[in-house]
Length: 136
Picture 1 (cartoon, rainbow, N blue to C red):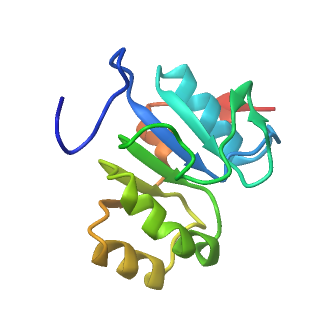
Picture 2 (tube, rainbow, N blue to C red; picture 1 turned 180 degrees about the vertical axis):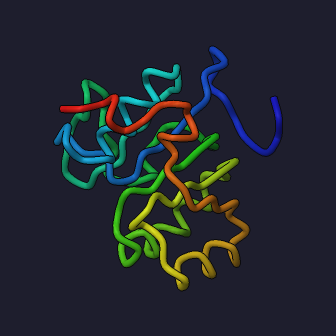
């Protein structure tokens, strides 16, 4: 296992979706479905939802029961995301995706200062699918 990231015991890549939503029209929900469809082990993060797409939702990144994540993908406004950067860093992600609308200069600067590997783009598209494939 590579020290920089961790896959689950069965070899699945792991992803936390910050801003995962039970609302199937929201991109955070589409991301959960897209990652599941591509074989990822998905950890939805939502402060109040108990489940997203049949998966246990976690109120914080710290509550996710793995030490390291392959990917964190962010679907919350930058003023919320900036407050989560320390939690992100604690999960030692291989990559952090700031989806459109989740980034700001301040957030990116602070994230890079923490050594987080930031990618500013749609993580769904990186999977080789389009958000429109996950219509509600």
